[in-house]
Image (tube, rainbow, N blue to C red; front, top):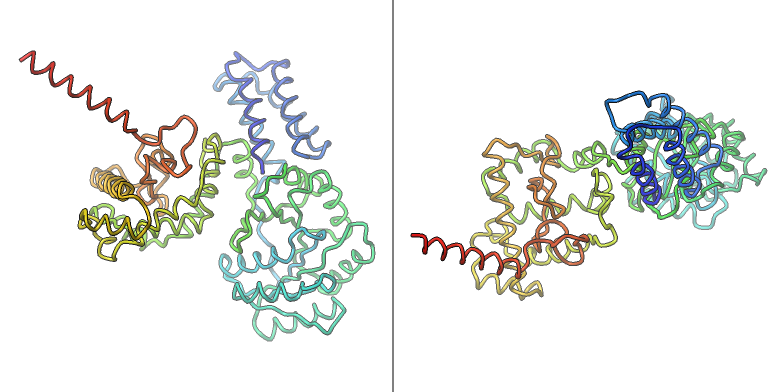
Length: 505
């Protein structure tokens, strides 16, 4: 969503790079570009104007600093101001009552019902609470059916009443149901409405007075643009919202809502949704989002995502297998599965500093499917011990997976090289820096086609030197491994060198 805004920020910073010092003139030029970028992203005009004024003032005030370059100073100041614009700190849910009540509100189509289900799963899995989903949307056809289906899929309790047409009555009965069944958090999924629909807004006001919720959260569509400000202001004035959940942050809209809604209401953005899966609800951290918008990645969130996939004991066992060079294709498949659960390689790249420069449109997570097809054509013994895969076995695997024999040879060659490298890293005291096992982020270079060793538990693409090596995953300017012509040229040079050596002797 923020790709265009990121590019414009970088352009403004590049114009300051190489300047001897910050002056009013070069700051004014950079801020003009940033102002245009914010307005193009549908950030509210007043918000954009104040942001640029604050950054300009601080840049001029800090221009006497000589320890950093003008470009670095501008990045730091913009990052600090952007963090403040987004809310400064993560604000957790305020759940003090027994049971605690969360009321969701918002426009038609903002994603309240699916968001309520995602929030229930978050409460259940991350906070270890016992949520109850309550269907309070009595107007949208099949809304009750939808929330019941979602609850069943996620394994959470749900309360609906198809006979009652009064939202307050449903809410009261839901509270009694939660108390009887020892459920500690109630999520009220209310009907969508327009901010100009006074009757439906009054229904929410009456519901608030009836149940006295701990949280009143506005579910806002990130693609709303300028309209987001009007929506947020209206719901806040009517209900006194306590927080915001921004939906569809993975979309291709301009994203100005994320930079405006907190500023105009003063209420924190508590969560964002970044996909359609039930797990695609993330706690909102303003500092991390600011870093991602400025193209500086978000390593902390990436490590947190990875930590959710690996238990400490499992990571330790995997590290030992790597150290002993017994890492097999079953382990490899497990890593691919974990990458998928974390959102796929395209999603993960956005968290890594500098990766926003890569051509994301050429990356295809489906390339893993081909690798999996090959591995699944192996016997369990072959997956555990790749060394036993003879030529006849390779031919059988190629036939079973529908690929050429050459691809099997490439996969085995690169897999063995990776395994040997990881064992050498561990035994040589270099440390694993395992993404999934903790300990840092070291050695992610070759994962993306570079020259550094890859993180030990991250699979590299065995079809051409790094994750971008084959199947439409190669970035511009990357050879994706040594080509045949390069190999031939290298062999020719080596042969000539040997001849010259013999002549000298």
